[in-house]
Image 1 (spheres, rainbow, N blue to C red):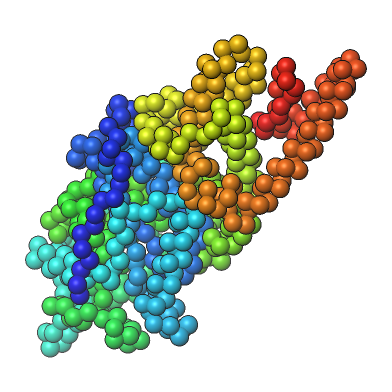
Image 2 (image 1 turned 45 degrees about the horizontal axis):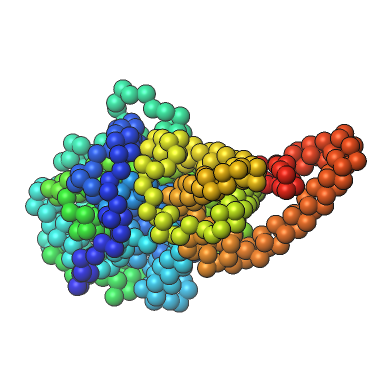
Length: 543
């Protein structure tokens, strides 16, 4: 039961000075139901813990949405100049892993590691930065056992014993002993919540809305008649008869394995110490997982996270995307049909607290966004001679970015507004490109185009979408092994068709048939193609 070594922080953003823009950052807090100014616990540093995957089977789009959402949060902190310690755990032992491994004739640890690798590959393909550290539950049994001892010693948990007084392996948190229970999700404040909060409150589980939760089935251990109170939950649980012998650990309170919630309390405290800045996760973890986690951490004598943030669900026709409901889309299946850049854009196209409806239209809009982005970056790079280096793009401080982008990101990571700022900059950049040949001060004009190009790429990079960054470069211009060639072929075909129309329009203008020339321009405009006329001829771009 050897614990893993302390992580080394590999984040390089500490090289940047903290931006002045940090003064405007406001984030939502699930516990307070309010958006408030963010102040780090340690100046210049941010500690984030995000609940990662339970590695029972392949990742689906619903899983990865949370990873992308908090990757964007992290990237904004880095762009602001903070040194970020980002911890994301792996739950590599639980009932589902044990049961599915047995059914498949696998060792439970074998199954867990197979799917842990699948999750890692999915994160990588979709441009999610590796965490500072990624601890596994099985590597932290000593930490969990020590934490449970503290909770028992503080009078907030009890050991279940058999008729002879021997510990059975079952330990429960004593909810009645902890008057603060429910503070994360049992909202009693008078502040008026916004529309996104009202939706998540209605759909997300909470103390007020536990009931028969189809998204969070009750842990069998929590159904025990040995509990003092129906609300009590398992900190440690005796093994089932079917549990393998190597899935059991000996403790002062009996042989067994950890309850679901205790691992995150142990690991967040281990790597982020006492109070840390942000605890994140999907909306479905709000209750009971995070409610219980907050209670047991504080009952052990430690501070919990200063702020709790939850990403909303990916929905399909209004229903949460979930394997258990049969509507999950596996990441490999989606990437077989769409480029990874397009999938990431689609997953991050709305603010993290908003429900994301997954559909063909969502992906089509993401593909259109890629076409517009790639078209501008390619044309601007050609106009100024070469692309700015990745090092230059990464070094751009938030203070140097367009004000509307900064304002949107500081407004609780409003990626919809941030994307609008990017496309505003692209439109302005396309206008500069169209007038480049007319400018007598060509060096100044090229400098303006280059500035627009740097801004666009730096904004995209903040969202993990700079097409000239990894993994998109290695996977092809469109960022997907399956989609890159197709996207290039589609662009070439479109360019040929539009060029033919522009040639016909040029002939019409030469013949002074302006009605015909205008009709061609209007038809292209209706198809989403903008035409710019210059002394060297006409050029096109996607609107």
